[in-house]
Image 1 (cartoon, helix red, strand yellow):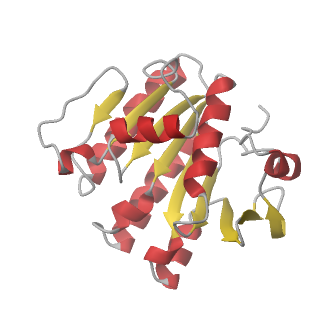
Image 2 (image 1 turned 180 degrees about the vertical axis):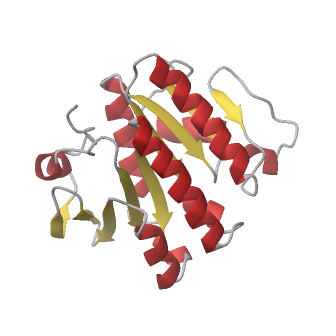
Length: 222
């Protein structure tokens, strides 16, 4: 299988998209454009008939869909068929929230076992149908606020390893300003490749370390 294109020509031309079966860490501060990168990647994957399992930890499924819409990306035709949301946030503000046709409501950031089981079940359902799957964690920084680094490392090592064996590609989002350098480096060690974004004078840039194709100098993201 060829790479999963992100929708950013400058990135895809140099890196050939995301390599299947790999774990990617998308790192940068809150202004770096991580959300825009992931939203465009999600739309690009869905347009190519790649299933997206989207784990949201810092906003509800409704807010996530509205955020996509504000970027001009409509998800309605994909929800429940080729995109499923695992909402690990909404019960913190609405304890009685329930599942719908495109969302599995989880118990919250402390229940990593519940998240792991739900992710495995959803992945297996799509894989049985012969689908190519991309898991997106938006973001692991929220999970790190509730779980210590060792617990998170073991959790991510397990779920990313299982995804890789199953043939699933994983993208983890990390707000590197929220954590100590030691925590950032610990999480980075889990990834096959690290994509770092930054905003400089109104323009966004990326670097890629690890993986088959590296970009080790800041390059315009467009």
